[in-house]
Length: 435
Image (tube, rainbow, N blue to C red; front, side, top):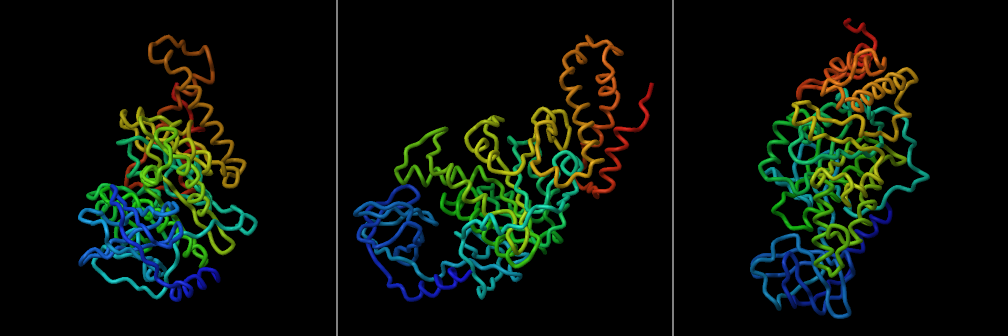
C-alpha cells in the first residue's frame, strides 16, 4: 500500500516522454523514439481524439503498443507520449451499485467518485500472511453446497460448453451467497447479455452490493484483458478493507483468448491451440490474486468455456490445476432437461474437508457411491439386461435415483438454505424404498 502511494506521487513528477507512431497494426501500433517500459500507458494525439494504449513489447528502436480503443483512422507520424496521469481506477463504497468499463469509467450514465483510486496490477498476497480457509460459503444451490461445497477464500471454476445453463447457475450462486460485496467481471460477453445479467439475473438488490466491470466482445483485446484485472483489483481493495468479497469472472477463457491476441501480435510463437507460452504464465498471476489476505476474504468463481466440451484443452487444463475446485456442467444432463446440469461425479471441491461435518461427509460419500453404481450399470439397465436382485447396491441405486435426481435439480428462483439442503439429502438417502 505504501509502494502504491509513492508510485502515485512519482507519476506526477516523472517527465513526459514522447515518440511518434511508426506503424499501425490490427489492434495496436508501433512507436519509434519513445523512452518507455513494458506496462507503461501511453496516449496518441490523433486530431481531436486521444488513443490510449499500453506498452506490451520493446525492441532497441520500437515500442509495441496494444490499444484500448480501435485504431481505425490512426495515422503514422502522430505524436505518442507516456501517460502518467489517470492511471488509477476508482474503488470504495461509492462504486457499489455501479457499472464501469475496464478502465473504471462509468457506463451507466452517472459520474463516479475518483477520490479513492487503486492500481490494477497488484501482486498476490504473501502466502504466509493469508488467513487460513475455515468458514463455509454456501451459495443456495443444493448440488454445490453438498457435493462441491465452497469455503470463504476458495477459488473455483465452472466448466461448461455453450448452452448448458452456465449463466443461470452463476446468477443463482451470486444471489444465494452472503458476501458483503460482489464484484462481477464480464469479459468478452455479448452486448445484449450485459443488461440482461444486471437487470434480470443480478437484480436491484444484488446490484446494490455489487460492482460490475464490463468489456464486451467487440472491444479490443487489451480492454478484455484489463476488465479481468480491474475487477480483481476492485475485489482486492474491498477484501483488504476487511470485507467478505465474492469475485466472479465470466469468463477466464475469454481473458486468455484476448491475451493470446496480444501475445501473438507482440511476436510470440504460438504453442498449444495457438496460445503463446505467456498466456499460461499470466493465468496463475491473475488467479493467485484471489483468495484470502490477512485483512479479509475473497471467494472467487471463474467460468471456463470448454471448447468442444474438451476438458483437456489448454486453458481448461491449466485453470483446473490452479483453482481449488471445479464444477463441471454436462451437456448430456442439459439435453435431458436436468437443471442444474452439474455432473457431481466429475466435480470436485478441494476444500470440502474444511466444510463437512463427519455426518455430512458420510451422506455425500453414500450419495456418490449410489450415483456412481448407477452410472456404471446404466447400459445394462437401459437395455433391460440387468436382473433385479443380482446386486444389492445397484438395486438401491436404481430405487433411490428418482429422489437423488429430484434433489439435484433446482428451479432458477428456488433458493435453498444450508440446513434444509442437508435435510433433503438425508431424506433422499434414508427414507424407505418402495417395494
